[in-house]
Image 1 (cartoon, helix red, strand yellow):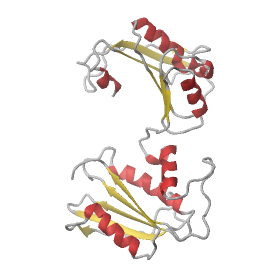
Image 2 (cartoon, rainbow, N blue to C red):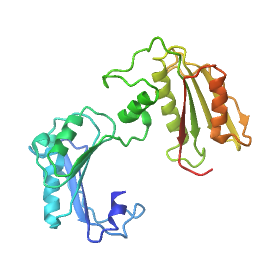
Image 3 (tube, rainbow, N blue to C red):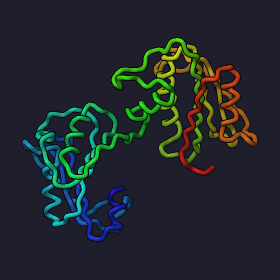
Image 4 (spheres, rainbow, N blue to C red):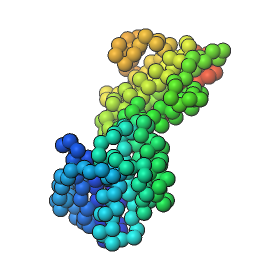
Length: 286
């Protein structure tokens, strides 16, 4: 993705640094961006250097500065991606004390145990920024997505490290998930995304007694959809499955409004006023 964007800036260079599976070893390289090299053709000119990690590598930031200075350009940036895990190996030694001469933008791919280090990297760089929104492949791996759901469901905990407890003295919360995915062309596959969202919402609704969860989505059978709703049972887990859900196949009709009309029927049938619809789209036109 970065390569493609840099093709619009003539004479730009792209480098990479990362730890490899060989113990205490890393690889790096940098070269001028060649617009003829694409995802299909591959990066034929990259050299695969295997080097031994040393102290004060600062998670590759020191090496990144050497690579940038060797190109002689003053307009530079470092993109720093972390898996959010704490690692005390040589490659990471000295990270929090490293002062950068160029902007460093940090991202976490999932966890947040390493965020304090990512913040220190940004604080020690001119114009750098910590980007809180993770870039996960599945929603339940993303702490920001989970916290966003907490706020949408009115269950934002005061302490982000603790899950919301059961809220007493309030009506149950009814949630309908609409998955407006093209069942044949979605990327990643619609069923992997839908499944992860489904379990995440289920877990959160167990903190609200007598709440209901429903689902609506288009099926692979042409012009068909499935839907159902039931009271959330804390005994139903990802391991046991949702044994009480009915797998109904219904014919799509005009004015379905991507399932919104059906979702309203499901919520109103419960007689509760506290309802939320979560509408997920793959961004494709159908």
